[in-house]
Length: 367
Ligand SMILES: Nc1ncnc2c1ncn2[C@@H]1O[C@H](COP(=O)(O)OP(=O)(O)OP(=O)(O)O)[C@@H](O)[C@H]1O
Ligand SMILES: [Mg+2]
Image (cartoon, rainbow, N blue to C red; front, top):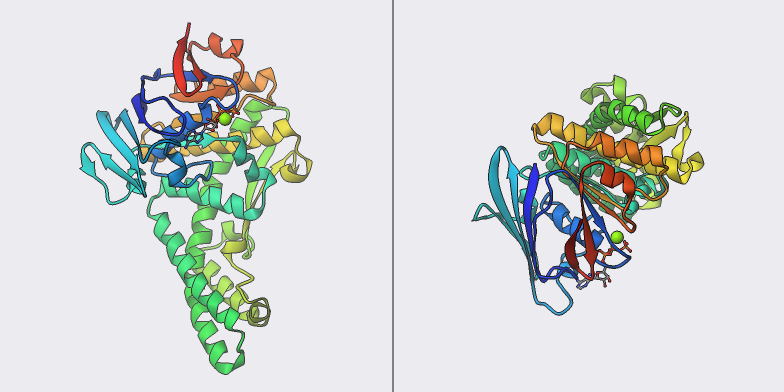
């Protein structure tokens, strides 16, 4: 995967024009509020995902414009391709001149991983953010997983509506049992998929984390589910156990007005030296842990798709000591990488990448 040209028109604060990035490490240096993150966000949109900053589509359009357009020339599947994204009232996209039914259909053609300081919520935030990040990573790996998520959400909404009605009685019990069966069926697919993803990702992330810490710290990650020891169970066993749990929680669920057990409440635990990274990790350790998970995500994507994703690293170097910075740059030196930072760093110059300056939405090359 390689981006050869990016053209922007009325996108956020970026000056209308085009940019030809370097095939290796691109370092984008600039003061605060110049448009560095905006640039990474523009590249990310071509993965078919929504903005990694959680922005609404309409916020992508430049303040004084009605619509914005981004065009990307890239090499994927060993050929030159072009994708275009237009944001007006909604986001639409074309791929090689053909309109797609939705901009999210770009997923699978262009792939990337992104690290943004907001992703530290993978460690610091609540379980919901962790679930969202694993689900998003797995969707890039297996696009069909989207339908598993949608189906689970649909059944959960129905069951929750019934819990909210709070009528009780035999009729409700019977209806609940019906939803329990369906929720257990789609829930087990969710748990099974997440469990499989974490099992694949953990050893890769562990190795990267060990490299980052110079072999001084251990790292582990595990899925914490309503159903225990999911790694040893088949999908059918997980479904049976989940059904059992749901059955036993009718009274609580009716009192709470929602479904209190199930994979929508599961979590992922990150351990550094066998202790919770969330409770005990330092800033640098937490950042390293998220980076290890993100780089592992890219390694898995490459294994599955045969295509090396681009890496977008927003403000990644702050809080990391020189040896950790050095390790990251070494580890991804054969990828096309986009790194933003406020100060030019001598380390990056050493790696033979190219540095660009972002000033007031305008990119220029730093010699
Ligand atoms: N839709 C928009 N139209 C015009 N300008 C916008 C739009 N959205 C954001 N901006 C401007 O873009 C600037 C922020 O850009 P960005 O977040 O990329 O900065 P940055 O270079 O990453 O800064 P930092 O180093 O602080 O992270 C802000 O000044 C903001 O006003
Ligand atoms: Mg920024």
